Length: 120
Image 1 (cartoon, one colour):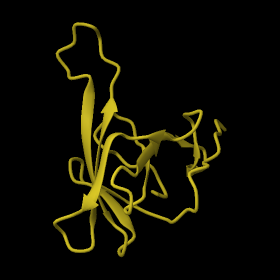
Image 2 (tube, one colour):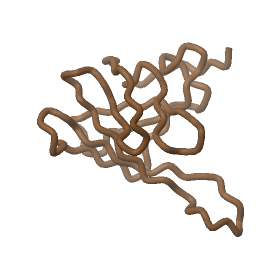
Image 3 (cartoon, helix red, strand yellow):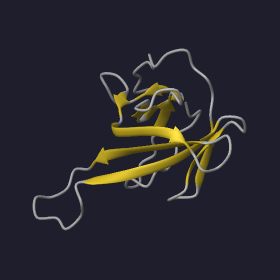
Image 4 (cartoon, helix red, strand yellow):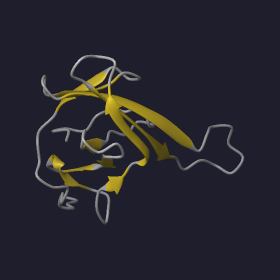
């Protein structure tokens, strides 16, 4: 999972991301709490990513993570009601990168996705 939130190209928000590279649908996200990605401000739990696809990347040793995030848009908006996200995990180097934004953050291992909710 990401140690800190990353800009994935969804508005001005930053998201925490977790993945299981061995699971072809193993991607989750949440908005960070006061302890960065070790806590969350959304819930009631972390969100399983919609249309998640996790697969080996064309870059050696990396993993591609793709999923969709639904957006709140006005009824007559010309904006699409979702954003398709593409991330690249380099577990050996210990980082996750968002090619669309150029953002990169450190990753850490966690035994579960039981991230506590915290607003303060």
